[in-house]
Image (cartoon, rainbow, N blue to C red; front, side, top):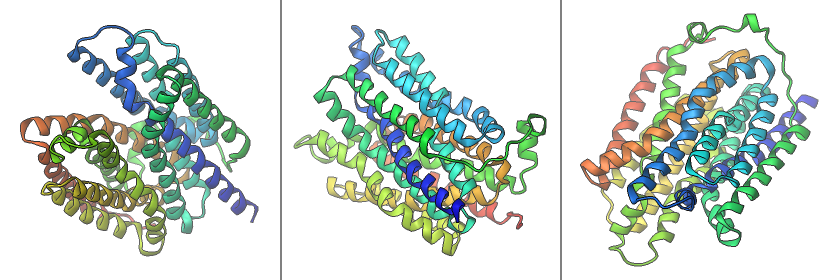
Length: 399
């Protein structure tokens, strides 16, 4: 009974903390290029280049460092990694308020990525300390906190920037992350049994010992493709909105609505799909999510009004709500608890790669074809993802 109370307490405070972290990480996105432009005089091309490098630096560092932190988490505990990540993020964002040139900003963005991983470790701790029959619902709740923070972040960042200044927004965000650090220390507890360093397998041995290696790797690829599809529209969203609105009306506002729509629907429906996954099976929810996402992506390529674009982006968020908790649940149920942090860390690496590649792919497709081509490409990626998972699920080794 006491363990059940603590697991509920962990879920409550980690959902709040994940919300705060995700919101903080997305707050600076709308004005990152504006902040960089304040460091000096840049040409349009140079500003775009430096902004892209600063944006990608965090995901690059996270993709490289996540497996290392995951291995350390399985040896030292997920709670310790949560404390490390929240402290690192607090330091990174606070120091960003003091930078005076673009290279300092890029270094701190790398630092941010290297010391990140709060969300993946929260998933790992919840997965390892929640009764199996409730793990889908619990992970769905964490997804709600993460996506809610992600879509509110840009809006809150804009409000902070207008009330304070671009520079002071980093101090405010850093203070929020310091509160997350305190909450993690005070309220998060973990029933953890450390492994000896010599018993920890190398990366090659780790994958060789996975009972359902093909399934787990397939789920990593699934996570990457979901991120690629979701973020591929980011570079051109305002341009596509401008085209649909015939360059009239509140284009910036509607671009914000379009960007926020998937996060709103995911936040509303992820816990519901998490419970359904616990009852019907995460495998079925995953396949249903792919089928739904395929038709939504294909349908989005055919719309001709801003209202329909908002609707379709809202629907793609519903597919995410079916996919993301199902991926996390399947990873949990097909991994030994002693290795769960490394599995979620590798999943974080693939997620970061998707976040890097998605916007680049979107820009490339839009340049070669047009804006609608992004959604056709997205539907094809979803179809590939569906086929990968149908194939790997057939090879699951039952415990």
